[in-house]
Amino acid sequence: MRASSFIGMAIGIAGLVAGQALAEPPGFSIVRQSQSANISELGGEKGGQLEACSSEIGQYCIGKEGGARACLTRISDKLSGECKSALAAPAPVSTVKNPVPRCAHSPLCSTTRGGGKPVVDRVVWNQTTGYGFAYPFALPNELHGGMSGVAVDSKDNLWAFERNAPGQPQLFEFDSHHKLIRTISPDVIGYIYKAHGIAVDAADNVWICDADGSVVMKLSPEGKLLMTIGTRAKRGDWDESKGQHLLWQPMDISFGRNGDLYISEGHADESPDDVDTPDPANIVGASRILHLDRTGKSINQWYGNSWGPGKFTMAHGIAVDPRNGDVWIGDREQYRLVVYSGEGKFIKTLSMKNLTCAVYFDRHGELWVATGNDGQLIHIDRDGNVLGAIGKGRGRDEGQFMETNFMGMDSAGNLYTGDTSVPRITEMVAPRR
Image (tube, rainbow, N blue to C red; front, side, top):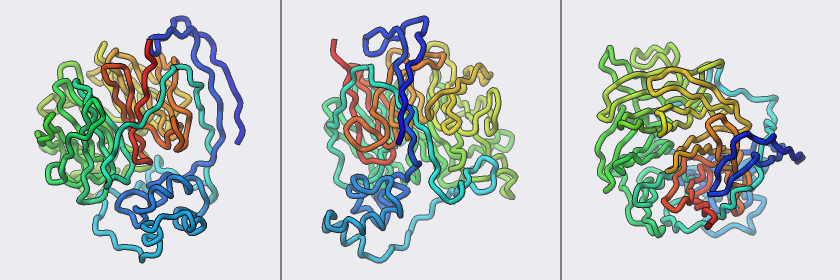
């Protein structure tokens, strides 16, 4: 691994991070890494054959050659009894079929590079914000899958959205003292094939996105299902001329100042290749933004699925600027943020040094981006300048993340995020004045 350090040029207007003025952006290091598998890819999520080994996989096997089984076999003396039993058991037959196939033929699908591991250069920003790290949430025993994301309501209660096995709960509410106060039963929301975006609206309703299940759901603050947009396990185009209201890979959701809904769709190489399919309900197969009113009635939609000004190959994260209603889109693998007006008019594209997995405006209107596998949350201005960063890069140690994603802030300025590959919630404790 090699690293080199660079110091960015001073910016004209000082940024404000945690109450401290910054005259210049933080420096950063470039860390060259092999692109290693996460726990899910290694077979360690809840519901996989090696679910009892999730702890050992996360501790010993991330980035190791040969996958989880080979790694666990090499360290058999370190395994728990449950993990040893799971390792020795025959492979189970899955009873749940994911309704969304992997992308295969589109030019946006990823390709193998000579059979070896791809090498990536990750930008890791220096820690300048003074945030600390805490892990105060005692997750239920059945939790073993990655924590897709979290959101905080007006009472400082935190909602956590987790990837779990059929029959297990996937949505939880913790109070402001980090105590679990509500578990949403699968009887309410069904099985979430791929837990993805989560957000809380101005009335403290909770919205969740099932990327592979093709639905977005709205729940009351008490956890009652109020609305479902889309049809479960039926992906397709939203076509008002046909009265057809289907979703295609919903990733995230955000809210306009008047309560309008913006749903981002499209996971690039993880999305199905549905262009010109024989299914008349599903022929577009393009990353897009749906603009609906608060009742779910269509207002507008616009498309990406390309390169160039105003385009995006995926819409992994989305956030509406509370100051002017602009819509910010995180086009993850293209390392860019794409900005539109609330009416769908292209404004600008910002090229970033990091993955742009989730986009978030905090309670003060400040802009944050989760950098996913780069393992940080970065605070930026509206020109894309980095003002500060939280997180020590990719990993499982304190202050590290395998994959940061959807986040929230409480009234004290503390930030929270899950980890798509690790079953934990991190509190980033704001420095006290």
